[in-house]
Length: 195
Image 1 (cartoon, rainbow, N blue to C red):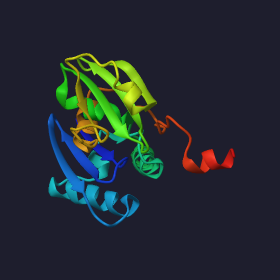
Image 2 (cartoon, one colour; image 1 turned 90 degrees about the vertical axis):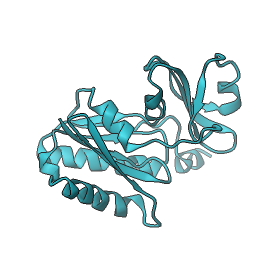
Image 3 (cartoon, rainbow, N blue to C red; image 1 turned 30 degrees about the horizontal axis):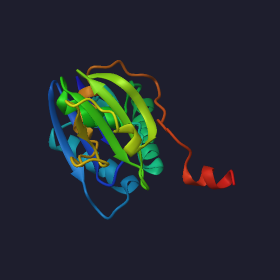
Image 4 (cartoon, rainbow, N blue to C red; image 1 turned 180 degrees about the horizontal axis):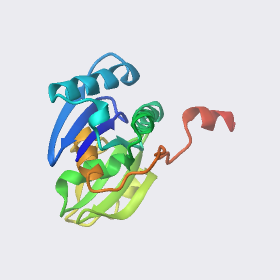
């Protein structure tokens, strides 16, 4: 199984290549915008392994929540490559990527959405216990179980979503013809339009 995965929902983007259980990841921490830097990084990673996008069995992307523009970039790249090569596309959400390394634990994944707000979800033994939602961070974390690990940009363990986690999760799923962004609240432009 060969999967090319994109993570573009946060400040540092990444791409990952899943090759029969092994995962190779490239972090993209640059002044260039994700739209300009992610595809060249993916091509370089594939080239390093003597592969091209045509060799992939599937494509995957972090569908959010996160930066509205960033989410669209990753989703559009995965959808375009899937359509171009007639391959499935797999959706993985940002919160489950944060919980993925801690499989059997109870994990509260939180992404900072500024001003005390966030996006949160809770996972137990690798399964979703509380679905991804927009939240007031203090309220969401008020009654967590004592054994709950907190991880993400709105916590003291400020990990960001990773393409490596997207790839590992995607390898366990069946893809679709097309994936869509996971928006848990209106964009700033949509909120201002409603005034």
